[in-house]
Image (cartoon, rainbow, N blue to C red; front, side, top):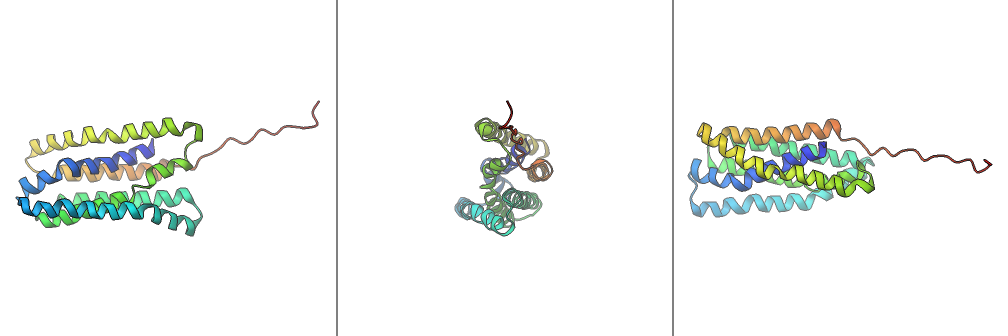
Length: 200
């Protein structure tokens, strides 16, 4: 469940970016259509780089520490935390390009955590439960695609500004980070039953 909450925070930021950030740039920051072309390219380019580096970073930490789960948790929590912080700051700045720079940074770190959500299951879930647990996590995380855009619309309509929507997205990511830090633990296997080969 903790991994599901972390992935929910990941998807909340992602769907917020997909559905509302372009509207924020055009409606609140009055960015032109010409400038929007750069605004659409930069975050996704950095996201591509982040996702490509995600596994490399996790493996590098694992080789250094010898602890696979701790390496994945470190990448997930630090990167998702930084992404959430950048989203909050993006809602507090006053220029379009500052917001774009911070959201681009958020997408980079968001995708940098992307390879860990599924890899971490290998250290926390029994093999025969992998399919059902993975499906549950995917279901919970993708609820962000329903909840996030709806809540954002209500906040913007109610307040007339986007600030609270940015802060909420970053705060949800922070709760996901805390859930993973506190509750994700290594897989504990039941000890094998010893048999006495000399028993009658």
